[in-house]
Length: 260
Image (cartoon, rainbow, N blue to C red; front, side, top):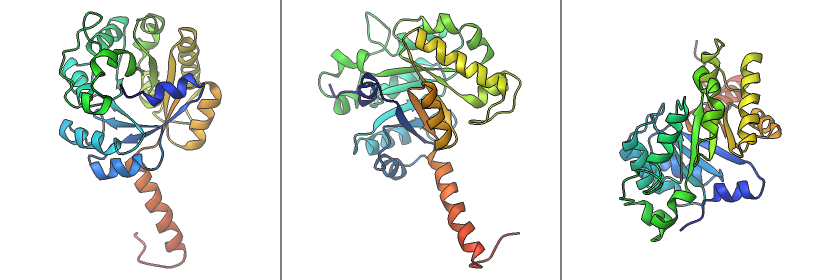
C-alpha cells in the first residue's frame, strides 16, 4: 500500500504543514497541491464542498505527493466510510466530546474484526494500491477535534481510546466554548491555557496534536510549542489576501478606481 507521508514525517520527528481547501473545485485543489503542502484537507464541514466535488479534488491532489485528508461534517458513519473509500488518507472528525464518540470514530474507520467499517474501497484501491484492505487500518490517520468544554472535561478518556492517532484543535470553537472571542492565533489567556493543556495531555498519551492557524508566524509558534500538524489559512483566504496585497499596491500608486 502507498505509504502515508504524514506518518513518515512524524516518524522522522518533523511537523507537517497542512493546507485547507474550502473551494469546491478540482483545479484549485490541484494548484494548491502543486505548491508543496505536506497535506491538504478538504473541508466538508464548513467549506462549500459536497461529496462529488470532494472526489474530484482528491483525484487532483493525487497528481502530487501531497497527502489528501478530509474533514467530515460530523461523526456519522456513512460520510466517514465514503471519504475513506474515495481515497482520503486521513480524517478530521469534529465535535468529539466523549470517549464513546472517539471509540465510534475509530470503529467506523476500521475494518472488522477491530471495527465496523463496511468494505468497498472503490477509489481507495486505486490510490492506495491493491493491498489497501490489508493495510488501510494502520495507514490512515484519525484526528479527533477537541473544541468544546465537554471535550476538555473528558480529554484523558478520549485520548485513551485505542486506535486514535491525533487530536486537532479548532481555536475558534474552543474559544466560544470557553466564553471568549473566536479567533485563530491571538487567543485569550483562558484559551491559551486550554490549548497548552490539550497538547500536553496528547503527548502524555503518545498521540499527535494539530491545530488551525491564521498566519504562518502563528503556525511556527505552535510547532515550537510541540504541535505536530499545523494548518495555515485556506485556499479562499489566500486568494483574498493575495488580491488585497496587489490592489493595495496599485491603489497606492493611483491605479484603478478605489472603492468607497
